[in-house]
Each structure stands twice: as structure tokens, then as C-alpha cells.
Image (cartoon, rainbow, N blue to C red):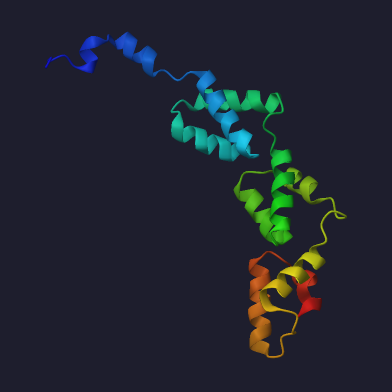
Length: 164
């Protein structure tokens, strides 16, 4: 076997060139993630920063994707609200999850503004019925249990009070 090491075969310039982060690679990785589902800018940055060390290149590529409308926080917010609504989550929890994902208040308001698309009271009734059946809670302890569940799901008392 040869005593030659990897570093001996390449000069420092060659190693630097081979290990340099290519902006095209960052863009392709971001587009691969976006092809699966919508992502917020914060989510994309977190995922890409794990793979690529140069944050300036990551930010530059994310700016380009936003400028080309391939990544949009408002589109992500609309998709996320629709998805979580269909899974039986309330507006308070959805709002909190969007804030954790780096979505601005303006984008959240715009995504949740379509009142005719989202009937939170009907959604709360469906969630409560699915979890506990159609029988009303008689004991105070059972009412408290159901109330905690609905609060955990992100519904306000106005949404579910008529169902208890």
C-alpha cells in the first residue's frame, strides 16, 4: 500500500475547490424540498443550514427563490392553515404553529381571513363528536376534560361551548 494520503494527492487549492459550496447545489436542494411540500423560509433555512455551512449563499439562494415566487411564506401559510383545519385543529393552535415556523402576523391574518372557508364552530363540534361521541358531558369532571382537550386543539370557548 502507498503511504500517500488524500491531502498529499491534492494541493490546498484543489481541496478548497472541491469542498467549496456551489450555489447551484444549494438551489437544487431547496427546490427538492419545495417539490415535496410548501416550506416557510425559516424551515428551508434551517434544513439547508444543516447541509451547507455558508449561510450567505443559503440566504442568497432563498432570496432568489422568493423573488421568483418559488418559495412564499403566504402560500405556505394558506396551505398550512387548510391542512391543519382539515385535521381538526383550531385557530389558536394553528396561529401559534405558524409563528413558530417564522410566518409574519400579516401572512397569518391573510391566510386565516377567509371566514367562509373555515367554520371553526362546526370543526370544533366535529372534533368533539369524533373524540367523545354525541352524548353530552353530565359531570363537571368530564366537562373539564373535554374543555382541556378542545383548548389543546386550539379552539376558543366560543367555538365549542355550545357542544358541551
